Amino acid sequence: MLWSSPGSAGIGGAAIQGAKLAGARVIVAIEPVETKKDKVLELGATHVATSWQEAPAVVAEATWDRGADVFICAMGVGDGKLVKKALRMTAKRGTLVVTNIHPATETSIDVNLMDLTLTEKRIIGTLYGSGNPRADIPKLLELSSVGQVDLDVMVSRTYPLDDINDAFADLRAGTNLRGVLRYPAAVTPARRHPCPMPRRPNDHRTAPYPPRGAAAQYEEKRS
Image (tube, rainbow, N blue to C red; front, side, top):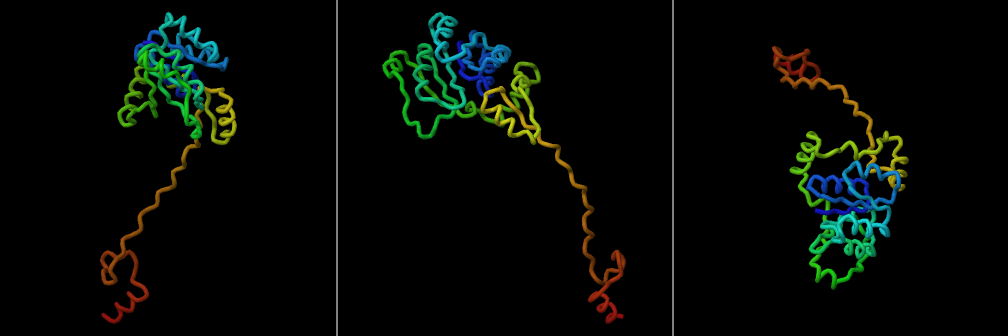
């Protein structure tokens, strides 16, 4: 099984670990940020290309010109012009998975339909890995607890809530695999005692205080 994943932020890093867990022999990542290369290899990539221009040669060498069985587009903002390049690097009968978001105004992509037909390739979309959170999140936590998925390596830096602007700046710059905001601990308010149950005016045995107002006048008339 051969994978290629352009972009190694949160989604790309998860795709690399998922490919490794699925038994991929060759995992090629396209990572243009120089400082992320070591992290990408730590996540499980076997080869790293620094650009879309370099990627075809890296994929061809790593796969003996067969291409990637699965190509996952995980860069932040999609570009229809890159779909054609991704499809060229996808193997015969392989799958091109589009998991990143494209602009809403982009209504067309440039692909060779002859190549799509003759090589029986597939282009599919997916949202959140097409997963079921109720079943998949406990499973991921279990895989993490036994060391098969490394969640800690995915977090490059944590930020206090006051530094949220720095977190967004690093997000735009592509500095982190994943940045995490830490919210201040919630302060639990002191628990109040429940109000005493109201008593009937003539119930002297359980009344916590003598009757007043209208209740007192009622008692005087009775006596």
